[in-house]
Amino acid sequence: MPRYYFFCEHEAGVIPDLEGMDLKDEPAALAQAMVAAGEIMRSNSLAGREALVGTILLVKDNAGATLFRMP
Image (cartoon, rainbow, N blue to C red; front, side):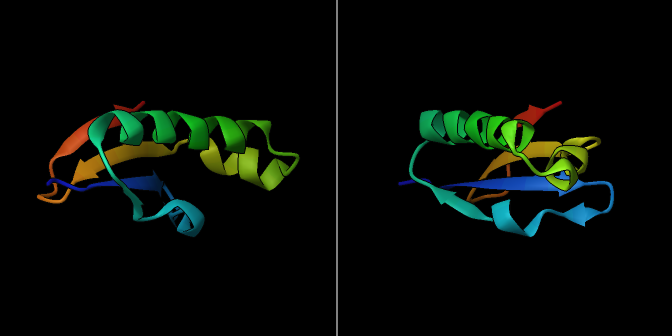
């Protein structure tokens, strides 16, 4: 069974809280990527919101193929 992983890459590096989040299936991976982005945007932390600027959210499978990329 394939596994999916969520990565949050920023121009200054990887946002550690979100790196390598293990997801069970592709639909859940896509949904969780969107939720994570939304949580950062709704965060009370200005640093958290600023960190998302210039960030690429990726969902990759266990073979390293990118399934979802935002933006």
